Image (cartoon, rainbow, N blue to C red; front, side, top):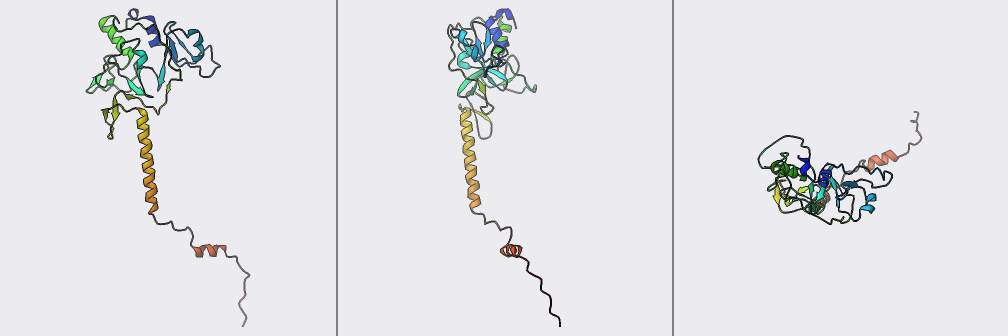
Length: 241
């Protein structure tokens, strides 16, 4: 990647290690650096925000140890066309950097033009860094792909963590009953609701089936219980003849 053709704020954004503990506020709670200041080109924790309240701030979110940003926020700065987005927590997000792949398998379909990761139509890049790398390598510049954004404020700061329950699904796709991908736009909450409904139906069926079962046989018969509770009397000797 030709570093000289990339603005400094973008270089730092793609190379910064977010969600490390803030050294200045190491004793404070929630001190992970999950905010990026575009004007100062530094990462911030929530306790560092006061001096930067008038700056352009971008919240970094995290899913399974990888940094993501909201698509709406990224689109104010970079042309995100052809970058695959994902829907989680009712918001579309894009990855900042490419993710390592566990296997090098290339079948048929769309693949990232930079790292060969499998993608859905009509996407050509798996992350912002992959698109930037491709543009710089093929055109030599980012002219026309970067936008001037004079104002960017945080829209309600949260911890930005995506829990394992909120599984990332490709934007605009849904899972059919056979597990294949279709197009319909079902998010994670719909998937969880369907799972909960299935569990309720399963419990009702189990309860209904148990109503027709014959009662369990007691562990001990009444005679056995009486015999077990009867106290032993005094021994009687046989009469002498």
